[in-house]
Length: 325
Image 1 (tube, rainbow, N blue to C red):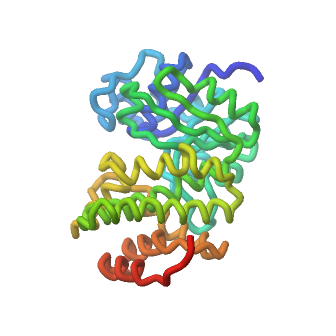
Image 2 (cartoon, rainbow, N blue to C red):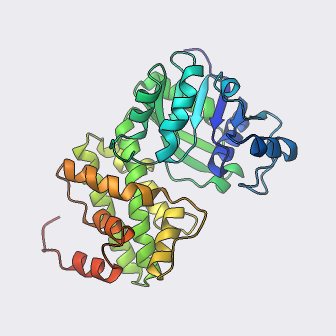
Image 3 (cartoon, rainbow, N blue to C red):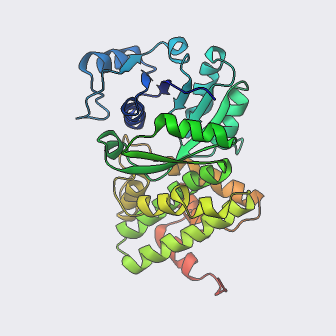
């Protein structure tokens, strides 16, 4: 396979800008696409994105609002919220060369269809080659060059390895995998469980409860993953347990922060998208279709929908029958 030299990042939020910085640091020619022309012009003029303040953009990063131009790269990273992925890829599809790798950088499950992100890409852009990037990371750390390890999965091992070589650098270490479904499940489910962990901390239930929640949450994630064909090593790796531990233990996680606010009796922080809020109901629906018990995720979904109080959720979880692990 020929080397991959050009990268486009679709989505000029904080995470998209961080990934554009990563690709430039890896020596690639990078285009950062912003849907709004004013936003693109502001970033291009100041060489800084107000959504990721304090990070100067490399001279190797071009900024554009021209999607046809942006789509000419050899690798496309789509960094949009999960529920907007289909729309972004629909717009991209007519401009893509055949067999272009399109990497989803969102963690979620599409409402209505119960589709994971690579399935959405495959439907919206049939000529593209879907892949998924997931793992424990925060935009600010990545952009500043703090040591970070993630997982990049594609169906073909050779392609996955080439994508890793194209994006990796001394401070950004992607591990490649062919377990696409496992990586997608780890990323989506942990967002919901991070909300639960935030609730536990916000409610001041103690470190023992937080530890129990993390371990029980991982048990749910593992059951769900196995039912949908994920490999065990993926679920205990960076995109499963590693991602869950990080986002269940720090307020840098938007999902944890949303849960923290709920546990304190406050609304989630305004203006900050927590993917787990959108993912919770569809995760529970998909689990039910596969006859997988996910009591913690189900409680989170009911709390978010206003159908269950936090106190009642805690009481219900503690009243569940004793059983063997």
